[in-house]
Structure formats: C-alpha cells, structure tokens
Length: 183
Image (tube, rainbow, N blue to C red; front, side, top):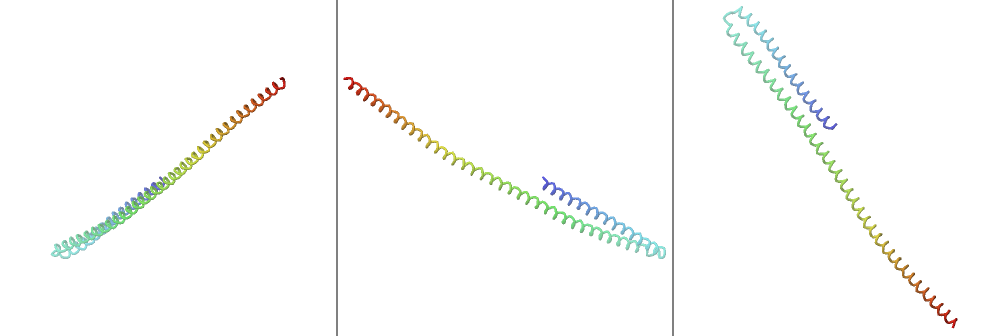
C-alpha cells in the first residue's frame, strides 16, 4: 500500500508538473501576445506619424503593419506549438516510465509472493512426509510391541501350564508315595 501510495504520489507530482508547465506556456503566450500588442502599438504609432507626414503612403504602412503582425503571430503560434509538443512528449515519456516501473514492481512482488508460497508448500509437503514416516515407524513399533506382548503372554501361559502340570505330577507322586507308605 505504501509503495502504491508513493507511486500514485509520483504520478500526481508529474501531473502537477505538467499543469505548471502548461501554466508557464500560457503565461509565455500571454507575454508574447503583450509583446505583440506593444510592438503593434509601436508600429501603429510609427505608422500614424508617417501617415501624418505622408498621407499618400498610408495604405502601404497598414499593409506592412498587417504583414508584420501576421508574421509575428505565426511565430508566436509556432513557438507555442513547439513548446507544447515538447512538454507533452516529455510528460508522456515520464508517465510511461512510471507505469513501467509500477508494472515491473508489481511483477516482482507477485514473483516474490509465489516464491514464498512455493517455499511454504515445500515445507508443508516435507513436514507431511516426515509425519508419514514417523507414523510408519510408530506403526512398526506398535506391531513389534504387540508381537512381543503376545509371545510373552504365550510363553508365560505355557510356563504356567507346565508349572501346573509339574505341580500335579508332584502331587500325584506324593499321593502315590503316601499310598505306598500306607500300604
């Protein structure tokens, strides 16, 4: 958001610069028109003086004045157009560069986000695999433990049965011995 705000501020600054340049161009045009008017006034004064001095040349002086005025106006218009094209080209270049910078930074940010996502996905997959391996090991240990318990139970049961058989045999032997000693 800060990056976008900075970029938008830069674009707004460029727009303000463009406006300032357009204002300067308008002021330059006004100044040139004032100069033109002053020059016309001077030319008019000179023409009036010549008209008073020589009434016959009056038409020629007016024609000169109009031609000079037209030439000067064309020069002012051409200069204004040239400056306007220059300023617009400069502003367009700056604007396009800012847009390229924004696009490049957006692409870089998206690539960074995708790289982090991939890292997280890889870590998750790795942890899942580790948990699956641990689960297999624990399952193997459970089966081994159950097998040992079963074997121990069977062994103890067999031992108990053997012990009972041995005790029965001893009791039978004692009974036989007791019966034999009674006879």
